[in-house]
Image (tube, rainbow, N blue to C red; front, side, top):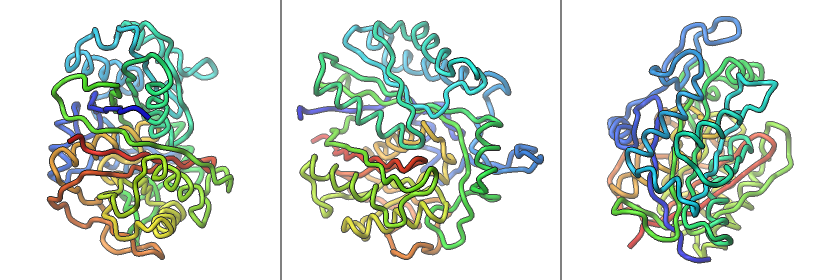
Length: 362
């Protein structure tokens, strides 16, 4: 595999409208998860990671346009309108209000108009592992095509459909989620957009990391429940480490999926134990943003890149006492530490599991 670089595009969450604004808020241990009045099917007040500046209608399209404006402001339009640039979208549902028509139709239109793209947009929609798979796919394009740059956009917006859906599964927590904690009650849903740019050469003087490798694996266990032995996640991470020629003792940090549900967090702890990573520092960023579905992999990778840039490990908000059978090393407090190599994992509905490894450029 040839050398692949990755840098920031932009990041929009309940905590801020840019990558820097978000990371500044995270350094202050701020959470974007708030109780939203009458957000449930029976008018319950659920804690959600809601972007307050988005309109009640057209939330997804407005968020995507805002991300495009940020990208042009930071990188200029020529990067995106170049024929050697490909764009990949990661989203679980896109503009769900467009049903029964194509929910990705507005995505294609907005990106074509705002960024003046020359190539067909690639859509990846594979539940909550979409973001990590999209980054892995971008690397594959750079290795096996003539594209010089691939822009990966992860985006999902809140809607009644998604909130009511998770409520019907009895998966929502009635308080901000506490991934891996003994008293966790479930998931909190959020909305966000995150963008990274992968390239064969560094595109500017901004901070870059090297993409080392990635993979995915399906445990084929249940439509919504993960394998109780962590088999799918174990296989994905093991394959990723082999591809990157990295051993467990060379990984400085894990950005885990950590939804705050009993089965997911337990499964992850078992997989990390099996992989020899039980002592490796890790966090879940769901306490900062909620679970942002198709955007989660992107905003969590961007946040982790900022941690690498500044050599700081951010605490896992909501975690106080171990609530899994394997006592993994969840960060209770943020701390300064050299961070060179990180593992990012994701798991999702349908038994999907994905992972990737990043290393700070020399």
